[in-house]
Length: 578
Ligand code: ARG
Image (cartoon, rainbow, N blue to C red):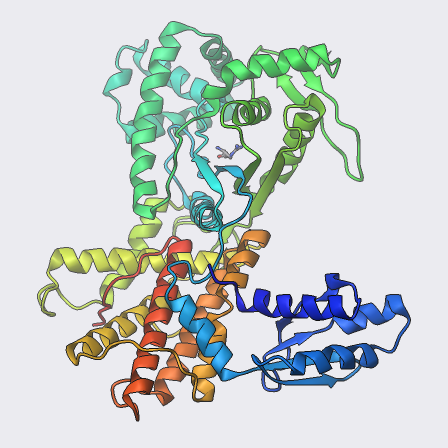
């Protein structure tokens, strides 16, 4: 498998550094800060000068001398205090782009020592419809899942259903209050169950006894009351079936549909372990673990509540134990609202104290909220929480308005148009979400979010569709691909952009930041657009140039599709506009 362009240059530099007996740790390039002057730069001489107490320009000069002798390199200069600026030969760039075009991974090597990663995202709750707050967990989580898988890691995704806490007791209590018993539970659909849950919440705000009843039912459910368990199982199944539909629409994939309840047994083990290690104490009837104060107050973790029930914290700790023991995870990544940062800090710390996560990497990727124009979490017009399903429908409606009517375009009946509407709307929603840094919130925008000419998902989808059409025309004219030859600046900068692929993927993986990919996909599409404006394919001067440009275009198309895939976005073969 071929190496990325940076890796190739780094290898050349490493050899030179060794020959000059310089520390090879500094033998690496980065894309030039001044692309108008050079392709890559190496700033190693500056770092070396400090430790060697030598003039950086002198060190840079000796490295540059040797680089000049390399046939792949067109020009080298030492600038400023000791930057080495490197320009590559077009032949070298063309050959690398060519080998990239032959490889379905675009020259990106799989990790040599893959790890097993459990990804925890989604996080839906029984009896609660998914709302806008669940969007980012699904979208960001799925993208990171795909990136990690592409890198070569073994990923197991788990939805971690919220099915074991007080909400269960609230719903069961409310149904009993309504019907006198639980006989009719299995006649209720998800809407009815949600309504019970809402009603129970309102009631318990004012009524302490109702709250106490719900709490007791939760504790009894957890300790095995058969009647409650039976009702609970039904409520859970209905909720799972309901959220599965939306996750399928969002194309978020979960290997496991486990929930907090599945950790119940392991909760007992965790509680016992904490006692054995002398870490827990009884405080006001509850069993807790106190955490050492750091630079901020660390509230204790509650293992068993005073009513005997287990809560959110201990189920998460127990789930870590299961993921390590049963799934053999090397790393667990949680994509959860950043307002739960303290929760994960506590949970991770207890896991370490108990020794159940030794050498296991635990990462919480906390995302910011999806906001409305007022900068506050997105709401419906009447101020309620926006359902995810409604949000998707609203977005589809917006896209539908810019589509031709069914039958207006040949081959596009109602079904085809609707499929396209869904691909574009979801592409727009996901891209808008992923182009923002995970940690910051963003304003959900419906006006321009699906425009074909901004930093949007549909812009990339459109770029792909446009190349598809070029490829179809070329095929009709029997034009076939040939070796990539770089003849002018637009071809050159497009090829250099393509050659960044491996580094971009690596960065997105290292930083767990899909926005690295959205930025790259956007600039690559723009680069292609510039290229295509000045570099015609079908009317190129020679057959060789046409064949080379055709291959470049196809490579851009394949890569853009791959990038969208990593963002969880589909690429329609063609796009339509009203
Ligand atoms: N169900 C939780 C909530 O709605 C999110 C679960 C996140 N994952 C976890 N392992 N705690 O807040």
